[in-house]
Length: 298
Image: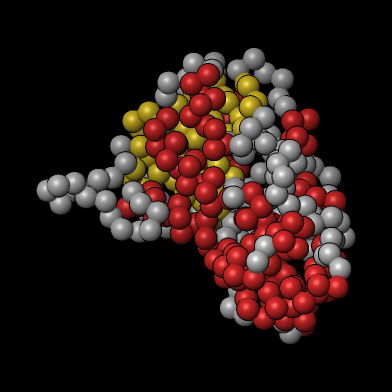
């Protein structure tokens, strides 16, 4: 089994518009699929990869033009400075969970496998899904399931979780599935469970906060004419990326100067997000929710 099949590989490369001698960043290295393709298109140049997951480090590419930073991409600006990079020609972010992380049950990301309620991208951090489920207060749980899982009956869900944990600590994915299953009809069960797991994963890894930090830093490190390519997998991510690239703010309000002129840092290359082809979906079902957006630094 491959670590992770790179999603929309050719579309990503087209979006980056790679210059043979350019400097590029792949902030979600994973299995190295996107990075390998970038290196194929470089003659000279330089590529910096980021990945906080220790499992991904085994996929490091042996190439003198490549360096892999074992850190969260929220530290993008700091590490580029450390490596003497003042401006880059392109940044690629393939957000979400890798196939490897989903398929290793003990990581706790998948609703299909039994394992510890972990869900940490970086296993050196302290906050786990188990801690959230068993120790967060009712209001905190309702907030995160509504905000990050877009769950309409969050109060009922939290009531069931809090009632269950009074008896014994909820420690595994299957134990959580059993508790959550009470809240939803059978036909909607898998989708509902996926929303619950998504909400917990986002909270564990502060995914929305990290994404905001990354986008602000990408704006700073990109040279004029540089490309930003972002692949998202759920509406929360996509909405945030779209607002930032189109209007310069995360809430969708157009930033303006004193005279009312738009303050834009990016030009959208595609008005609508790019989605996976039928051919790709036939071999990689996990690409079904992916949306790719490309913007150029002004």
